[in-house]
Amino acid sequence: MERLIDKINEPSMLKNLNIAALNQLCDEIRERIIEVVSKNGGHLAPSLGVIELTVALHYIFNLPDDKIIWDVGHQCYAHKIISGRNKDFDTLRLIDGMSGFPRRSESVYDAFGTGHSSTSISAALGMACSRDLRGENFKVIAVIGDGAMSGGMAFEAMNQAGSLKKDLIVILNDNEMSISRNVGALSQYFNKLITIPIYRKIRDDMEELIKRLPVIGGRAHPLLKRIEESLKNFFIPGVLFEELGFHYYGPIDGHNLQGLIELLARIKIVKGPIIVHCVTRKGKGYNFAEADPETFHGSGPFIITNGKSFTETNKITYTKVFSHWICEEASNNDKIIAVTAAMTRGCGLEEFRDRFPERFFDVGIAEEHAVTFASGMSCEGLIPIVAIYSTFLQRAFDQILHDVALQNLHVVFAVDRGGIVGEDGATHQGTFDLSYLNCIPEIIISAPSNEIELQNLLHTAVASSKPFAVRYPRDFAPGNSLLKYNEFKTIKIGKWEIKRSGKEVCILSTGCITNECISVSESIDATLVNALFVKPIDEDMIKELVKNHRVFITVEENVLTGGFGSRVEHYIHSIVKNGVKIKLIGLKDKFIEHGNLYEIRKRYGLTQDKILETVKEFMTTNATS
Image (tube, rainbow, N blue to C red):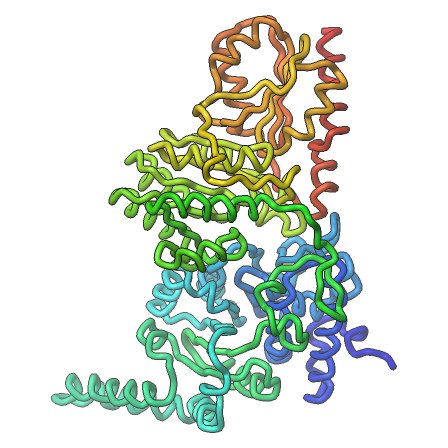
């Protein structure tokens, strides 16, 4: 039997289908997403939860003329399939394949590239304003989850949108609230009532008439508004959005395709900013994802029949090491506080939360607030550990600089996912942190090469009194050593370690890529230095090394501009004017795309064989120069 999904080459083809066929298409899309994500990994639960909503949006609106912006983008898989990319969907998240996020460069149907949260309403409002300035006529729809709505940027955008009164539709995809309590016959009836054009017309005409009444108009209009708000309070939980200037509709069942289509058809002609409260279930249609949506929010490959991961291993991740360390440290130090921004599980803080609930704070998707919140705690003598992914910590740059470093406050940053992260791609690669932290005065920056160093550096950070960042990757640790509190050691800040002594060439490496350099140093009889600290650098060691080495190689999994190598190069040139050659190995000035970790590292010259190749080429060139 031929599938509908194989016939859909563009969204306009949905308009020829009846409701039964559209529901069949939803089932086929669900099967297709499960099939591909089980092989490639990806954001399964969010995408399964919005399939009916996605089909309804494409059925009612006219893409690419109309614009849909998917906040974060975790939920965009059905959109990609519908918009002519089903034939390439097997390449999802593979190197040189389809991105797991909306990408303007990938399709005209991707109106805005996303990957970080809470940006959709701002972008949508910008498009709406541009449309009106140009005298154009198209619809702009932002689809944002309840988690992303907790980000302050979303409310900044809503505040302006309500003030400008532009035609704009915001779909609030709420997958946390109970659907049974809020979505019933009365609620559905009320939604139908308030979206009928004659209802809005009568309401608007009455309001305009009362405004024109000569004496009582000024008093009657507020009275009418209070009456209307009281009625809405009774029927729907949308007063906050109404106060921001939005017309609120909902809540509506996000899996009732017929109801979605009817509602979207009605609001399509309503003027002004609109918010539709759509209640969905993450993982809808796949039992294991419905039962455990957090695990299947972003998963690796798995077995469809039982939901079990293909990548289960006895190895421990650096995140797991951090999780163990913070619980050990907190058990022996009641000043330790954990702060994260909607990444409790991702940053390994579930055990800490359960053991020390009064000392745990998940602030939601609000990285800026997380950092300043932590600085306030530090002012009062506590030691906050702020655990945030490298790519998301970028959002709090000003708070790190202004609220922490400028005041020289003791805040510890556990910078997870430092370096290349793999399949999530350009929006998630943690390849800028050494650079954006490096330029901030007072802060200490460290990068371990193994799990023992990670625990000791974190312990050192707590023992210090400075702003302190410990950066570690999304990867397995080389060993399985989980230390007890009495085994933690304090490392002298700014001191490096010589792992191997060699002859003319000296390799200075920071972070976990140091492990890639061990065999390289052995192959060419080079000195290998494990640079545990990126800032401050070990100036005393460098002064000794330049006496016996004429070639220096720095290696880092970070952009070269402003990173570890640039700081070392600047210092060497400040103390040695001639006779020393320096080669910086790292990432060039570009965004790193998605793909398998090893494949990405190989492509950008950060595997053992590629580093050795680069070093030998540099040595050969300089031997004859």
